[in-house]
Length: 94
Image (cartoon, rainbow, N blue to C red):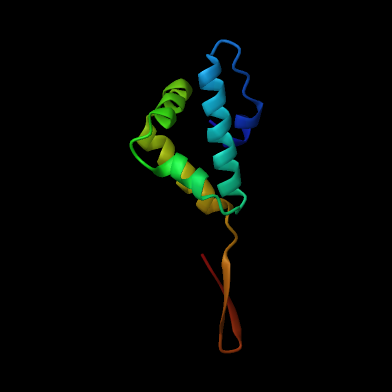
């Protein structure tokens, strides 16, 4: 699953509750991926137990722990590498 598809998910056969929590999930994910400070989003995605996160992962057909790992990897990959100064040479770290 490509996380960018989350904003385009159509949920006509899902409950209103599922659609609501899918929106919370996608908003939390995109805020963190885009570098926004979102304690509530981080809590929703990574605090356990969270039956609402589990409902979304079940609906997406992905085990919760696997989905959390993929989220962490995607967020880490979206963050720019840090630039540090060492003597006269610039070095990219990250």
